[in-house]
Length: 392
Image: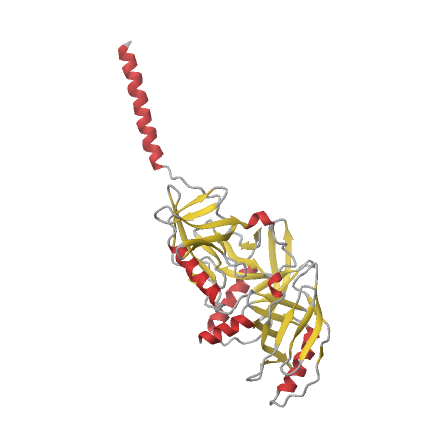
């Protein structure tokens, strides 16, 4: 009997050892954070945890195939990440666009990118937290999914990354797409505007009949982006929306296009400065040493300076399709300015405003389009342009 007990005990010990050996080979992951869009609420900024600037929110998403991308407050970023056992997380070098914003935003962005490089582990519990190698929390995030999804149709979607390697659009170039309720699509592809049709059935999505304007882009990189972007749109088979993020997939279920919803509310009460506008089917830049401004409030009041005189009018955004806008003819003061081309420029600018049919806004650049999808006016946020000039 004692012999039998020894055999049983030995067998139990053997099973425990074998089970322990197998258990040591099991990698412990928590992948619940993958595939969702996250908003950074606070992170280590200097020597202490600080909240993110409300005017420059930071968001990010982790894809199932090892990529992380998002908005760093001013610029878009992307890079790779790797999960290891015991909740270890390594984030590779991040690539960013190079737009200039206010100094506070740029300082926050630099600190955020640096904090991301120090991530060593994570906890994806009720609060998604990232830690450094010493186990100190360096970033706290909350899921944007709890806010609810942005509507698929009527939303201006800004491209943040594309292709199998999550490429970022060139600096100052943010392609867009809008899916309208009537089954048509429209947007900008980098240099040209485009149009087409789409069919949606559940999560299935097909895009066809894509056509575009025929402007020649000076930048070869932008032309390359435009060709790839339109080709990828034609290969879309399914889609998914998570909060304000839209991902398009091909027939092989590979993610190929990644968008963020346009922050429409940021258009309101933001002073814009005109960069260029359409005059007699030709893009014309603002006369040297002159300045034309544009600002719209939440109740639809539009005001600004047309180069010489101040002006005011009203605008209405379509409730069902927020990319559509109607601007009434403007009234202005009657001063006479003698600078070369100033009065002619003012008349031309005020004349094109009522021809606006739609717009897009990527967080920095505001563009107005006519009913044919041609850009009739391009603005930049006044403060951002001022900051950029000061740094130059």
